[in-house]
Length: 493
Image (cartoon, rainbow, N blue to C red; front, side, top):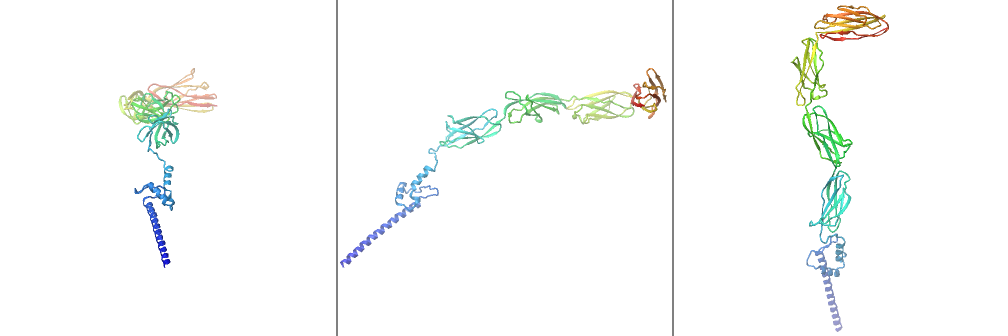
């Protein structure tokens, strides 16, 4: 029984030890669970491995020590401290003093024949200048040069523009001590400096004038082959190209009167010149008028015609007044040939005066012209005919006096040497032959008025072979007008 009691005691001891072991194991599982809960509640791991403390219940040093000793089942949490330190040193580019820089670049204006200065100012975040920093300059994204900032933080770079145009400037500072963004500005390059001059001029309305401008560079040397535009009182009238001396000349017909302003301009971009102005004085056109030859007959209608300045179309449509012996007989309108006329019925015989008057206007001066003409008391037509047959020449002269009055005059014939003279027959008047001068003279007194035949001469001559011309000569008085007298040409074989 003792043995049984001893055995029973041993069993109790073993059971007690086992009970303590189970209790100890339970406590360890409880501690592990608490640690896991602490990790779940107070720390998290994002997709980039960044760790962040959300609670002040834990000391990070203690946490690191406890987790490294007690946690061995999670690969993400076993090396927490070492991963965090590695991220800070390798993956974050930071400025430990939190400094930053600022660039400013002004716009640039200049001419392509002269250099310009590209400028940039570099300051810190408090607008304090940053000296001895290298600034790189770009024009249209092409690096053109670099310069260091001075004590005022300003970097200047001398630059020669390649052409006249608009460009974009960019300044860049690549230092890491003061991180700075690039800054852009504009650059406008104009043409080279030059000078325009327009010369004063004067002229007359309706006439051509030559306007002249001189285009020179900054050294007063003429610039050739450039187009210069001309304006009068702000209205463009034409253009001209400069010659080798820089002169541009434009021929222009003046179309207004007064003191005008002429302007010359150059619109190219390669040269920059201010517009030039000059005075242009335009006077009224000196109107001229002439009376054409008047050919009138008593009691018949005839045209009185005058001609004004040829080619001056500004006169077209204007009126001319006509006077006969100082009496107004009508008006005529100037046409595109600058002529004006009036149909007038002649009511007298003898001398008379025609006067033409243009009163002028804002562009033309007034003008008056007079001229004396004569209306004959008779008008004569001389009609000559011939017939050649068997070396004989038959000549007939018919006289027609259309009046209005009878007329007295003489007609003379010169007979060629190869002709043999025979006395002609006449219907009226007398004939006398001068053998020495070989001239036949036909004298008529108070030749009657007739519409078809006032008198007639019939003549037969013989001749040797040859070519001949015969035309009678009229010895007339002032009261008789010869209207027609034809020449005879013939051949005798």
